[in-house]
View 1 (tube, rainbow, N blue to C red):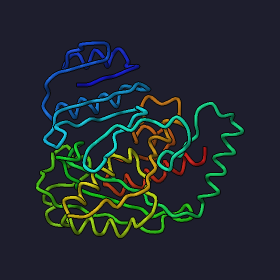
View 2: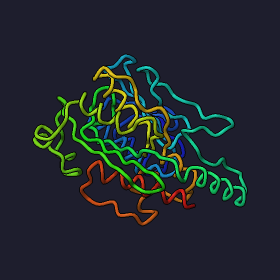
View 3: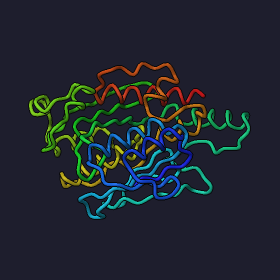
Length: 287
């Protein structure tokens, strides 16, 4: 099932080619996993400032998975079960440290300045993962990259390929340059990769683009390795971009990067995207 609001007419017509619209903005149908993923990507690319939520059956404890785009309700993992987190009516949390709508420009600049000054010397980690698909219960991390930031500069980095039983698609190989043979030759085991990631992150704040996606995959990686979750504090760069930038068609990482005139590149590994996330985050902090 797919639900959309504020959806452009052209996208609604496109969705009708694949799904039945049973109510305004509510679509149902039966799709293959590949078509479903490509359709979701098309929705996220073309819905502009609209919102989308998708639910589909999966072989997990809940028997379903849901995805959300541009919504204030976000999927979160709670002891192996995915729940939807409602936005807080008040108060800023560590996960979503952004300014509420309605502040004057003067107050906004003062708050940003305070946040920047209070955290200028703090250390944090930027994370980006490449995975075989969107479902953290069924898919696997193929590559993970981490940056350590201190004093607004990159002071250390880590990246590795991770072996799994999941094969990689030709499209994935064209986008990232990662092939099954490369992973087999240079990849770490899931346990070894998780231990190195855990050591690198430590107790630091972890920053990422659509951070919950990466957190869910890392948590599942740890569970398969018999380890507890290592990411305690997070900040979502995509969420900040949605709050700060009002004139974008969508909030995909590539779109926000182009807004700031940052080079995206054609073949991108996890470390390339990790550095891109860091640069976007730095640009947002300058606003």
